[in-house]
Amino acid sequence: MKVHTIPPVIKENIELKEGVHNKIKVKTPQGYLNILHHNGTELKGTKCIIRKHGTMQTINIHEMFETVKYITGKYDIEILSLPRTYLSGIEISQSKTKTVKIDQPGLANIYIPSKGIAGIYKVKKDNVALVKNINNILRTSVYLQPGHYMIIYRPANVDMTSLSKERHFIIKSGHSVNVNVD
Image (cartoon, rainbow, N blue to C red):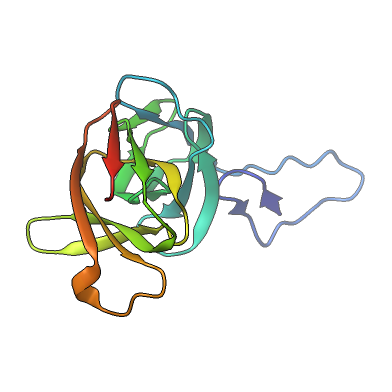
């Protein structure tokens, strides 16, 4: 028998008695999970991948700002923000709501002089990681988690990396910044 909880609970080896109302007991202790931004406007529509702790099997796609019921236990969460946010070992307790808060993103308004190859990179102390390609786009707005970023841009039909342009910018929670790549 399958109980349609998140994740589903399976009970096997059930014996049914003919002509009698059968009661089948299944343990399904549940609590709630809510994923929010600290302060500010709700950016609804951001999806979160919920996995049982320590596994890569997706058990649910959870939308931020929705409260969803889960079987008690530990879960890993991958929030599809830019860049992605990873949370590990989030504990769901019976009959309680676990609220997880991440920083509210900021908005980068990006202006590029001509079509070409461009990318937004997250700058960390010891590395740089690609967050999003923005090739052949002149203007775009991108919500990014707070932090230090840079754009690297090279005009179309240019083969020399020495002609690439690099612009650094800082995203603060709940604020917007204009980034002009000239």
